[in-house]
Image (cartoon, rainbow, N blue to C red; front, side):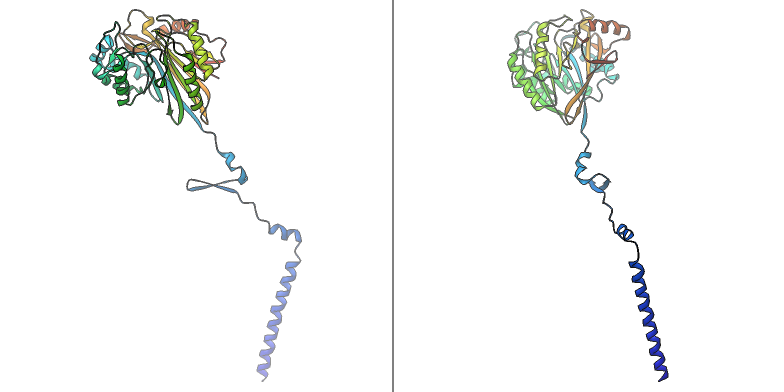
Length: 383
């Protein structure tokens, strides 16, 4: 019996100890300062999380402002333009001997054709099956073999202006074969026969995800319907980010552009044109900036067989970088590259001729009142 009493007494003592410890814990917890208890219960604001692909990134910005972090899309298009390109008569003879490598191979070695989104020239004649000539034979009658033109792919040519006075040299059949043969060889092209404005005058293409509108008109024998042409430009402007116009116009062998050319160029820019590229005079004409848009009145000959003078064997290549933000143009930078040829073999102009060429070009240009930055002799930024 005494042993039972001792066990009961021990159990009572143990229960008393546990109860005392529990009561002491409650007392000490409740005696903490209120401010400390509140601070321990605060929950940090979670960082906003936005998934990018399969990864998660964090931001300290509020979730409602996440869309503000999206950067504006910027794009630069690189464009290269040449003047008149002809592949018949003496040029055809030179091509049969050596191919394009002898004609523009040295020019290619300079790297001029590399990295361009568009390489374009005025194709001065018809591209007929096997280069056939159809009756009646004209005094200046041009036809090119599709295989010969296809070889220009090696030099990154991808677009031709056809609006000129020689597209119709082989008649309507020649015009049709030109369109078929160029399309077969994956060349883009625009332009109708002289003075015509129609669906063949313009198109919109996508370059580096930017919609670019192009149009071409020829005004050699007759003027174009200016009202129709301006309507074409306005339509291109409404549906593209950049509008480029090729014009076959002006007086042959005259360096100075005339008033009619200038009036039309200004009207086209007022309607929405961003760049105007001219040809036909077979010599280089002046440059003008109108409403911050460049006008190259004539780039002269690119590949031709007019060996009668130094001026007809000089030409101008124009490189243009067009910068866009959210597909809206914000800057045009163009570089002028003077060219010279000998027996139709084209190269960059030699240094001993550059200064005279530049001075003569300035005389027939209108650049003095334009908002320009001359970084180097041949590079101009249009602000």
